[in-house]
Length: 306
Image 1 (cartoon, helix red, strand yellow):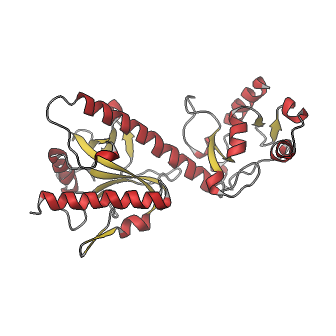
Image 2 (cartoon, one colour):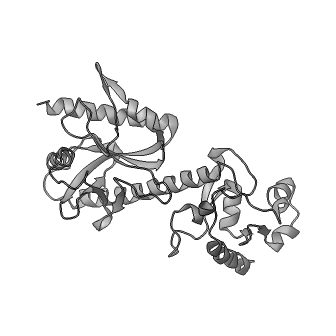
Image 3 (cartoon, one colour):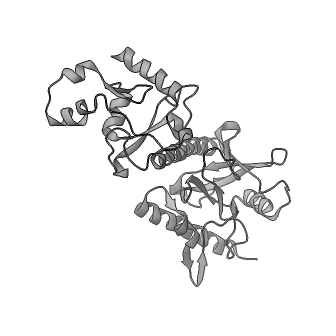
């Protein structure tokens, strides 16, 4: 049996490695980097593997859990859901509660061992969250409950006694993390569908591109799916959100009349006015193109604002 001290050293090194990699590459890390992992003394420690629940050879308990990326119109193994109280519901491996991977997570829960959660953004890219803890086991649902805690705490366990403040902190961090991860996934999927170009001006610099919702988050149909998204540069996203420009159901750009009449230099002329009547770029696949009903509803809001 390996010592708790060695287990903690490996996990802390894994956390430091992720902090280093996200500072270099951003929040979405290539699978190759995670699968290669890091050296701990003479041992290579990968951070994920082909299965959702992953235990490197150096450890006795799992190091990470992974949600595979969304691929349009395909079911996902190891999908995450929002469970009771806003916690992450993470499904068992298979249907046997006694499978060694499920047992490993159960022991990690009992020992309050921190893990890493990898959320699949798009195929080949994963966003990490750490430390996460297994806090519930639901054999009837074949799932565990997972919370995310503050990165700054590392391996610090909560003090014994009243856990009200700890539970509140973890619930808040978990909700914020899920929101961030799903926004990242939506952005990357939309940008890939549009070949990383602004649908209006064709700008190709990914760092200047965003995924705009056609129907907003709060709308009953405002789901983070590609037919509800447009890849737009920061300027055109802001103009779209503020109803300075609209996109008709026939995919034609329309500017507000007061903006068309305004004279305010070359940026306004070439950045906005010049796209009056232009047709937007759309994905090749009909299933990924903007939903016409969504565009019609959004265009009605633009007309009303105009």
